[in-house]
Length: 291
Image 1 (spheres, rainbow, N blue to C red):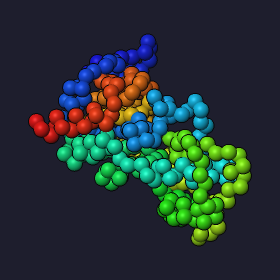
Image 2 (cartoon, rainbow, N blue to C red; image 1 turned 45 degrees about the vertical axis):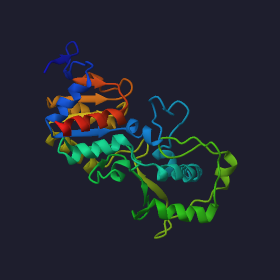
Image 3 (spheres, rainbow, N blue to C red; image 1 turned 45 degrees about the horizontal axis):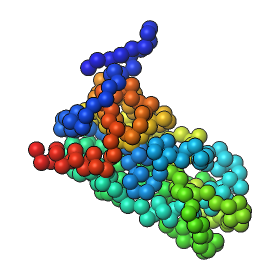
Image 4 (cartoon, helix red, strand yellow; image 1 turned 120 degrees about the vertical axis):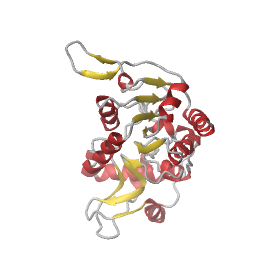
């Protein structure tokens, strides 16, 4: 494997290059491949990403952990917008990409799935052991007593308090909320924890919040146990995902990236491929299982 260096600097991984579908197929054919998926895998299910072709990053500022815990107004804004957006998240179904990843796992080509997504679509496709790095929107946690409950239960309680909020043409954001008129936000009533009356938060890692260390270690262990790493639909802009690519490259493991657009991890990859994920992964699964 050719490794490149910055002048006077450390090894940074294999020299970046582009490759064809056959290279990704050969990588998977060797089995024991860990998958790291991002928002680009869910765009075909109607959930936009932050920075790709459907990206909302330039028009949407996600809720930060600091704003959520510090401000009742911030929590009201989050839950009002998320209450409307949750309807679309709850209706979303796994697409061909999610199903192909599960098929590759069932067939033994993929050994582990780590996802940066909070939409639960890997689980819905049957990949029950997928590690949800940033948590899941279908769960809620109390910041007071730590009790976890289902988002469906909270949704019923919020509906009882606020009725149906109809917002025509509301654009869904990747973190599951939508833009709402200020008057709707100000009138919104937030439900407390049923057990202790504390503050409820979606069981996801907000911007500005750290992924729990045991979960991070679990992901490192999965990458260590794998022979190679395949990144699907992630720009790797944030360190929470990029660190696993760097970790694999430092260990000398092959890294391949399939993403519509450049990523922050391209320099660590032996193969980069810009193709639609649903059709591409379906083709890979068909070719690998028919040979």
